[in-house]
Image 1 (cartoon, rainbow, N blue to C red):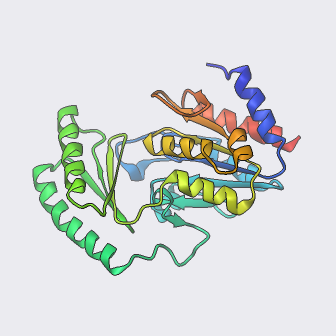
Image 2: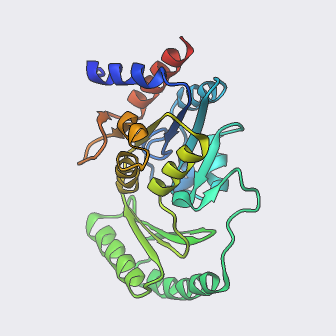
Length: 261
């Protein structure tokens, strides 16, 4: 499906601003969703387009992901000056000290690990991922009934701990002791940069939070200029939609060409 004329006009208008933030999710936007999260790789062309954008004056590029920083950096191949925002906004590559947890948060993760050990006995097919401030239950590749049962049990486990932030997604549930949220992180980064406009592309529920936060930005002029794009199907608050990761690469390449003019 070709891009709509409305999207092309919005892209040209966005590219004309002096200072912009270009941000995207990684999984489902630059890289197809796969059963093993560490087997994910970006499709051809996306990362080079982002790197070229980041080299342009007045252009900051960020990957905003639920992944922890180290695997995000490893799998994307991103290098400076790209900004990496990991763990749904809780980690920032520009802060080398990493994520600092307080004693209560560390104790909460210890209790969560104990309960997840029992969870694995009941749901042996589910995979667990450890992040600096969270644990994630993955069910991609499981039979539907088995996956649904594991995801429901993970959410029930999270609900027992009121200090945990429970974030469901496509075949995942994240249980976080420290949580910022993509929307908060995007608006904060745009404000810090003094960006005139923000481009953000995503494919999942956490990205919908990002789309909504950009639309509700306290800087109402910047909010009106936000160019948000949903990748794939599903209900969305984004202004536009593209079919898949390859269509997103084409969109990024078009943005690069427009920004270079």
